Image (cartoon, rainbow, N blue to C red; front, side, top):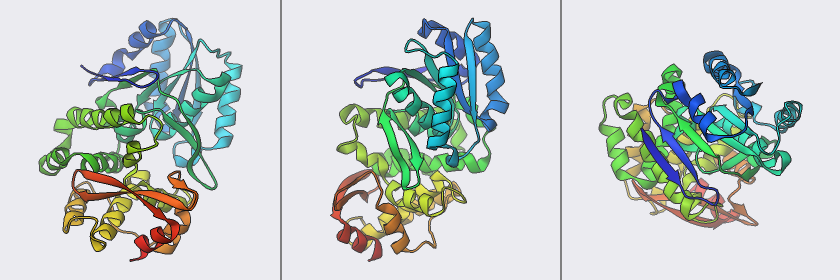
Length: 350
């Protein structure tokens, strides 16, 4: 069992262990005095794990409500957030009680934001069931919902009280969904860790080293979050590929293309433009493409740079007439580049 301690304003522990889901009810019962909770999950996860998990908690003496979303990015909206607030109220959740996010990034983001804002803040636990959630979104305390203007524009920083991460839960993912999560794993490798990049490139079967890779990513994010919890400086580097990626998602109305696919294209786009401008070392983009293709992730888009630019304007890293993007000088080394909107337009179109 691996335990990773995150030393933020509200410190917490991440437990990573294969098979830990089987006894996470015991961990939760020992962690909280409260015996009233609401599980937030989606239809797909509920069918596989939801009822089993609820029954385990009931046997431990918990009063358990279950709030089930439709699966998919489009569920991360204000209407569902409002419905969840009402459900929490009807479930008599108080400030001594807690929410459990059982699912992927959509579930974790929405449940976390509800926890941050309901009764001005209650505790929540993350039990991530997708690779994206296990390596990225369940860690660091970013919670949010999407609005028409863009992705994750309404949210709050609210650290979980505990993260329980079981790599065995990923065994039920389709190959497509698993590879989608590899987009975020590769992001960590390209932006921060050449050794992780080499490990991913050379490993024949990623499942043989999955727990190790998950911990590599979590430790990478933990170190950055501890330095910059509020996303004011270095933490912005975690958004490598995301400014363009989010623009692509928004252009497609959060359908047709997944988050991991959009980020994959975003990483390639930024590195290609960086090579043209001498920011990125020559041939680094080809290395990135090679590893993305290994995990069946896309490397190009037919969306015009004009549409990418327009759909980037609501990005959280925009400040007035400037926008900060994440560039890579070479594999494992990233830096922030603040551009005027005209400079950003030129960067995308060169």
